[in-house]
View 1 (cartoon, rainbow, N blue to C red):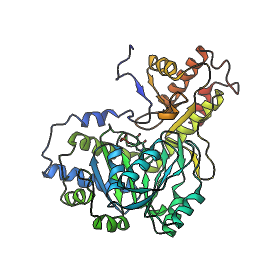
View 2: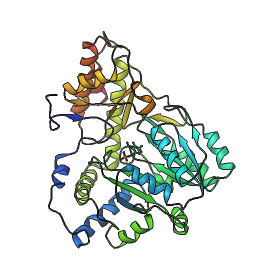
View 3: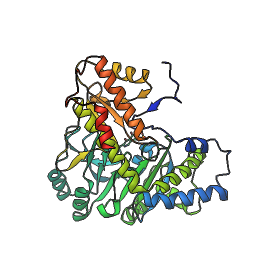
View 4: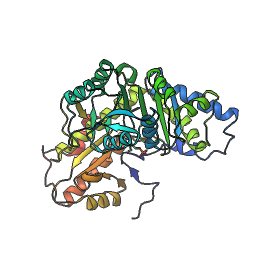
Amino acid sequence: MGNTAETELIMIPGPVQVAPQVLRALSKPMINHRGPEFKKILDESREKLRSLFNTESDVIILSGSGTCAMEAAVGNLGGHKKFVAIENGKFGERLKLLTSLYGSSAPIIAEWGTSINTDKVKQALQEGADAVTIVHNETSTGMTNDVEQIGALCRKYEALLIMDGVSSIGGIEAPIDKWGVDIAFTGSQKCLGLPPGLSMIAVNERAWDIIKTAQKRPFYADLIAHMKSADKGQTPYTPTIPLFFALEEALKMLEAEGLSERINRYRTYATSIRAAIEAMGLELFPQPSASSTYSNTVTAIKMPSGIDFVSLKNEMRRRGIIIAGGQERLKGHIFRISNMGSISEGDILQVIEKLELVLLEKGVVSEMGKGTLAADCVLEGL
Ligand code: PLP
């Protein structure tokens, strides 16, 4: 391949580019996870995470990837719960599988990449449900679901709302308290710009009241056990200490930049990528409507005819850029470019320029749709 990981630009929707100071933090010597140094990192990180989550709720940090928090969110409600699982992509599907594992699941399924019919959610709530699950930003389709509308319905029909914010929290506005979200979670390898391996979950009082009465909870992701330990500045089991060092550093960087500035920066990057894609004559994959928008953290593009994903991926990699394909049923039909993590305007420009070069070279596009270089669109947007 010629390139080494150090010179490549990883533009997949997690893991993402990690800043050098965060990488350096990973190599610090180990500390006692029952000692004061760890307590300080944990306490301060949990406090800062409340700002990241826009919440008054407690935030728990789990040593486990995003799916660990998904399981914690669903599994801690105690079994026999009636869930309404909203699915319009791969991660909605994963939540649906988890809800049927831990309770009974009445899924509301829309074609992947299309909007949810909120009337169907309302109807399901009228028929009685304990909790609703929704993915805020469907990483698999590049579309963001309107959680606010679902939150209002959940409040009206007194059901809990569980929100997967794995590829939105810290990158797309998500005021969870205001929206009436009871449990929300994210993962480390997305908007926070960390390596994979940590997840963070916010739980409000309404949700705690149910969790506390639950007869059965998962063992490793038992939120009561995690909360009891967190109150002492610890975790119930050995934490991934290097990732906590990295989290401390990533949160400092976020604080220095400002959450709304970070969100705005991501919005500009994603808008520019979309403009450039359209200028190249390519088509965006999702079909947002009243209850969804294009994602500002990941762009999903329909595979153009004249090239397959493997060739595109290899040609991009030869030029030092790593892009993602589609998952499951979307494999071969789409490719995805993320704008999360430690990246700059220059990186976005480079990705677009190289994509354009590959497509021109392969004869997929002969001239730019609007007669302008796609890269100009990026420059205009940035
Ligand atoms: N939810 C969403 C929206 C995701 O994008 C992902 C991962 O890409 C997950 C959940 C699962 O996270 P992980 O792969 O870290 O377990």
